Image (tube, rainbow, N blue to C red; front, side, top):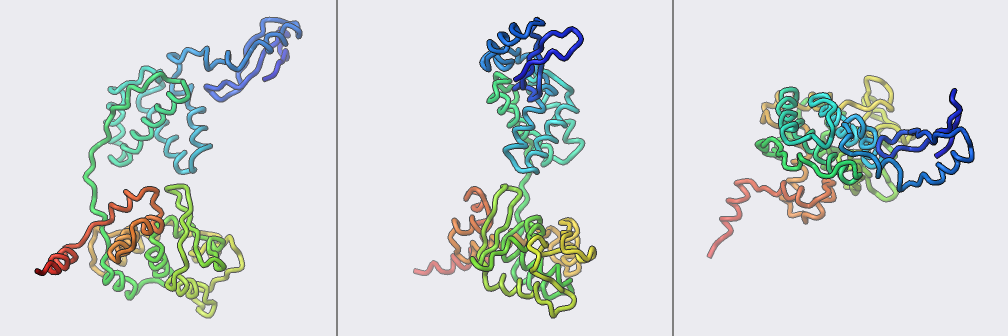
Amino acid sequence: MFLSNANKSKTYYLYFLNPVTNKVTSRSCKTKLKSEALRVMKEFKIGNSPRSKIDISSLKLSTVRDKLLSHYQSNNSKNTFLSYRNSFDNLSRIIGDMFISSIGKSDLEEFKLRRSKEVNLISTNIDIRNIKAMFNKLIEFELLEFSKIKTIKQFKIEKKKMLAIDPHDIEKILNSEIGIQLKQIVRFTFLTASRISEVLNMRIKDIDFDREEINIFQQKTNSYKVIPLSSGLVELLSEITNENNYRNVFTMTDNENYLFFNKLKNNRCFKLRADTISKQFKNVLRKLKLNNDFKFHSLRHTSITELLRNNTPIHIVKEIAGHKSISTTMIYSHVKSSDLKKAVNALNF
């Protein structure tokens, strides 16, 4: 907060940070005398700032945008922030710069309808969830009295079965004519129950040989999961770092190097694209005539499913999978018909 009379009329203005717009705002002290201006500044208490005086019924989407999004940028991961920003901007674009207090159920239903014609229902539901959360945040910021859209429902989407690849088929994949690096990525994904983005973001510095563990950053939860260096992982890492293999020359000297780098760039600081690996994997599946519904992410499902089938305690599986809630891990606890048959056959009296 400061005073300035750097204007033609030499009238003093009080400058302060507006808590609503998160921008510096000015207010005339209506005097050219410094002593009077100082008195105005002294009496201008935080409690009398625009937050308590502002007419919240006059606030539009454009007015609260910066403050709202700066909160998510400061408190969430980059991807989460971008998701909220995109949802907010989609709302403004479709319904216009409306007064936030007047935005009601019919406006959001209209938004749902029009947005669903632009993107798929899953993306539309993400927008709906984000918008409802942002309106709740506006209430928390005392910029909105109550939300008229809290009862808006998302589109009902039939959940696709999370397909797990049979271990015998994974052996087929690894024994097929598959590139060395792709094979290593498949093995690493399966051994760590990770997402493709997490695997491709792995750097040498994330491997702790002293503690015999790997630290894998999960963008989805904005947290790390720690995976012990199993014998399978040690064998795989030894293969990756085997300098005698001229097709896979690798060095551990630079901690910033990616574990799986883009060899076409001939630079270990260039990481591979997730969509490139996914397409390569899909091509292998087609050549082997495996289930067309399988995709690269099925490897993660397979890993988690196999852990549960091998009677690994579910709280341990939760940590390996990197789930925030054990209820998410429970989704994978489905069983095969062959397992049911084996269990029923064991009921002998």
